[in-house]
Length: 137
Image (spheres, rainbow, N blue to C red):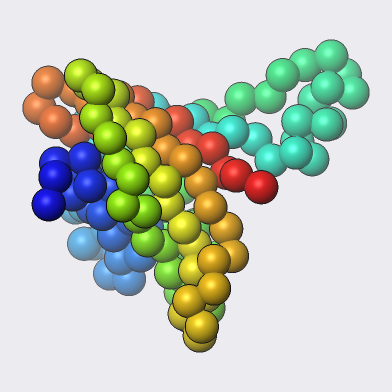
């Protein structure tokens, strides 16, 4: 397995992890202490901001904020048992940048319910220092 694909699979595993303590450990292993996670805002937020002449940015920083972000996503999508996240096998690395796709799939039938693109910049130790997430229509 290539290094970028392994990173993408570890990334998806964090969001699926049911044990809160283990999830926190995985976050600390995958992201640097002060890593930034930037989410492309959903269209309704973009529209609301545009109406007042602004551009929205959804950004968090650090392990505590990442833990809250991942946990809320887990509670909404994974814990009820309807969905799971999985990495696509399209990860590629160029210097300190890795890009990969992911899917949210229904557990019942494997149908893809959502997709996204992740672009991450790695620190010297191989952990993520910047994480840009795009939810695709």
